Amino acid sequence: MKVPALRCQLLFLFVFSTGQRSGATRAAHREVEFYRSQPKTMEFTPEELELPPCKYEYLDHPADVQLHAWGDNLTECFEQVAVAMYGYMTEIDKVEILDKQEIEVSSDDMQGLLFQFLDECLFVFSAEPFLIARKVVITEFDKEAFTIKATLYGEEFDLAKHPQGTEVKAITYASMQIYDNPGQHELFVIIDI
Image: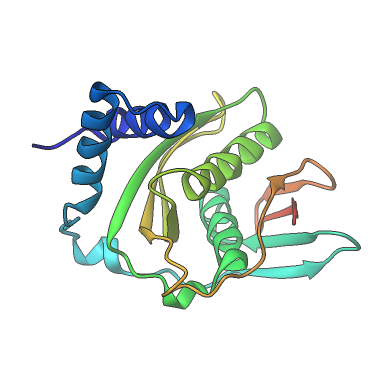
């Protein structure tokens, strides 16, 4: 018996948020626990397991931290800044590629798209399956419609394996900068910690 992830999350939220333990919710609880106990084995291609070079850094900021990412194009910048955010939350070299999750975001402009993209990456970490990504690959990036589809590669965050870094509370628009010019592709984003 395999429970789709969304159904599992809904059952989990119902059972644990309401505190109700009727016969139906006990059955739902058992179904959620069964799904969680199943081994998660995925097959990855060599390309999926290959890690890109690190093209980001952390810059000081009075109250928060500023992520600075660069690349050969804007797509690589977006990928790098997402990994930089995950790297601030734990030691990224301890994260293995054991699972993956697809995300899709859209906005009205490029700054909004960067905000939504990082916010969705943060949500994937903050909610089941609590995925911490070691690698982010953008599969579709439409600069005119302001949409992104991406795959996050990593594993479920586990305090026994992943040292706890600094909690990222939110993404901000403050001092956000996006450069997409010939010879200059870089991003600056402040995250609330």
